[in-house]
Picture 1 (spheres, rainbow, N blue to C red):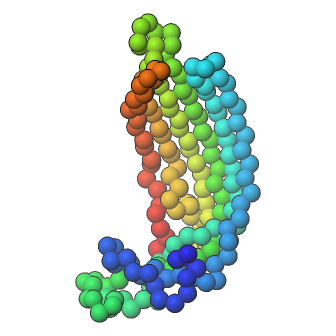
Picture 2: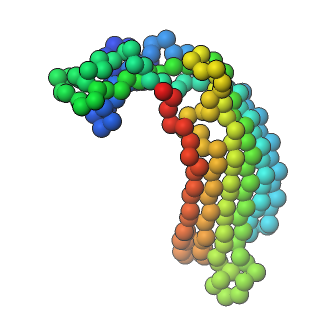
Length: 178
């Protein structure tokens, strides 16, 4: 409940952050639309293509608040070189996220011997996102929303043993607004 906590800030000593709650925050609401096509290869796998759209009102994000902190660097009588960073939770009146996702998984059952118990699984998603905030002239990407996410795995699975080698990738993304 740090987001709505009134009074003194939460102190993050690792990053020298003061994070103020905002008791005036409104809850976020969203309308979602998902559409997908799936095709199954018996019990051996599947392929799918999906699209999604999410319209969000009052999205909650973290913003820097330089006027809310004692930027001399004094926090609980501990001198912080270079001062402290003050943050506060805010509402973005409108935001959206939309994207497409492709997934494929298949056991390699056409191979001979134990090789038939190997398989591959992968998925990729591309997302477009934006939110409107009063301090910016143009919409901003949603914080912590990567535009590209890729997962891939090679696996072995039989009746007694399962092992999986996986790779995950997320494109760079915005973490906070300043």
